[in-house]
Image 1 (spheres, helix red, strand yellow):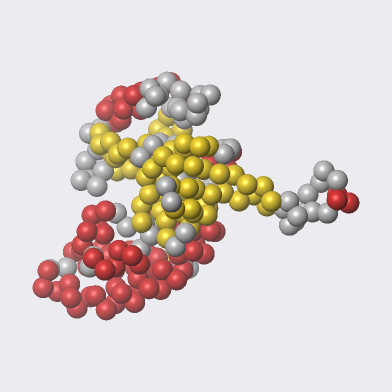
Image 2 (tube, rainbow, N blue to C red):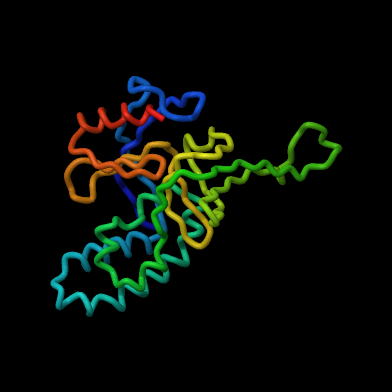
Length: 226
């Protein structure tokens, strides 16, 4: 195992009856510290990507065999991490800038980013016998699904997402691989911009770029408008 440490931006929103964020005073942006143990292969691949990105173009070919081995080991370990710790799976997903540097054929071996509006389902499965009456047993569980067009995903969730009910048109952000999606807890997702300046805002399948915290606050106000 290896230690993953990051600072994470969250947009906390109070939802209206149509499940859109209420106007601006109801939304807050906060930075929280994330510190978690993750399988070492994820940190090893992240380190390899940094070395690969910083290497001269004529030196990158020599690093590919090492990277491909780490990529395959990472792919094998990804479902367990996504089920156990979907937030870590999200944070460890390579940025679009990093993905652009990798060989094109590697794309299908990495989880893909999903930013969309779609169906979010909450299903209760109860396997207890009639003798328990209204009670539940350890065999009872709640499952979560995401449907985007013709694609159906089993969803792994955390945090505030666990308080949500089924929604026909939910704001969804996550990373997906082989029918499993690690789903972000927030409706509105804010990340440092890929360009290195400002923020990227993801909401209901839209991606918006803002220059600074003031522009971010103004952008959040507009999200309350259907």
